[in-house]
Length: 122
Image (cartoon, rainbow, N blue to C red; front, side, top):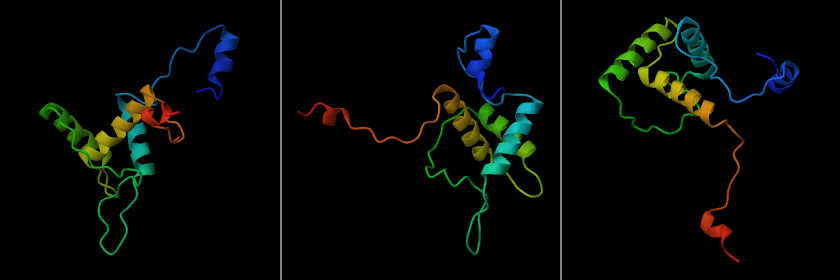
């Protein structure tokens, strides 16, 4: 992809109206997802390290889903696992969820915002 998409669009007389996610379904999408998970999942630490995880994942919410979705995540996890690293269905789900939400709302540096009630004070 071009480093400066706006410049490219200007040269072509086009307008940038949105962004496409880094990957989607298909062989290339699964290969990209595997690469991302391999880069981001780190082995556990300590005497008895657990399964690899992304150190940024500090929340452990439960996400309801249909049985069909769970089966698809299990299949993806099986495809993305190898002898070196076993990927769980929920790790796949977490990565897909992070990438999907980032395509709707771009990641920005964390900026502490004042609460609405603090803004209204004189």
